[in-house]
Length: 84
Image (cartoon, rainbow, N blue to C red):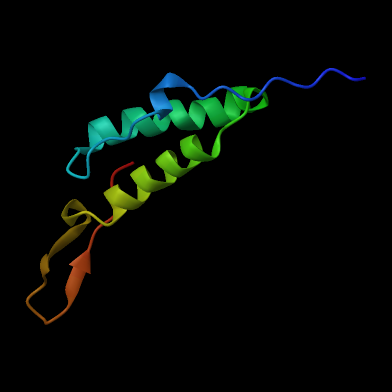
């Protein structure tokens, strides 16, 4: 009988996510580690929880009030891009 491959281990930095109010520096540090894991160590696996944490972090930052500017005076709500 063939040996079963070990289950992927979840990196410790992906077990919790930055708060919704986290600033760019904290958010990017967290995402950087996650992207580095995906790019350099994907063979170690990435659990559904880890993937969901990364996705949620991006979603939370992109939908936070930090991503939106005040109306531009012409009735349009302007947006700006995050300096990632």
